[in-house]
Length: 367
Image (tube, rainbow, N blue to C red):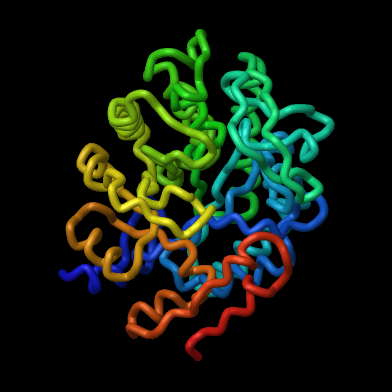
């Protein structure tokens, strides 16, 4: 079977059934309303893209302290859950499949987003370089985060369970645990950000501990075959790095094999910006080539793919599905456009974050 044919064939990711192998990548859009509730427009936005084999929601914080940017939605209150339930139903009404991406940003935050909690939390008290958006939508220097105590970590795990239960109550087909892009779980994995001396730091085994515990906790709510994990080996976004990424992420894959997940979702490091720009690093290592063979389950790859590249990675057996981000933003009917070889709408970067329907729900379809 050719890669083009494979792209439109069904595939099972654990117990999640996809009608094709095009995945809508998680895309932060910063359009939530008061209470960190998904905007009413979000129901239209996601339903428009229900022809994807799988929709992974925008990163959705599991707690107020887990919030990293203004206008991002949560899944820790009943009001947020009720809004997500309407979105899920709208996607299901169009025969779509959708999972919630569970998110805690760790140090990539600002105290103005959660003034009642103070500074952000992280594995170690190491600030990221650069600036981030506060509650006033203005740039602020990153603050030195609070190093999490064992009690903080126990509370965090409880928050993941609550968020997962809310996702289940909303009707999601599963959840994806966000352990990529320099956010909290990634900060525990990589030694540039994790300099702890306890059971959660030091050795690779210790740095993998929290991710494994979070998976086990979420698996109290969803079967492991409905849980995915996102990783970003070699990613430098959010001031990340590790002294031995091959050893770290090989060990991570071996650990994830033991959890019998729905899938692992890896971001290719050529897309170094992770949303911050269009630049592609052609000299970056190819993680699907490095890690796919080590992973015993289903594998999603993401990071700057066009149609031909996606077809090739499927045909070469380096992935079971391909995630597209920017192309799904501007082409709600991306699946049909790929099938027909139709021209794609250009995306407007200026409307990616914040705003209203412009650049969100108003991109034209073929029909």
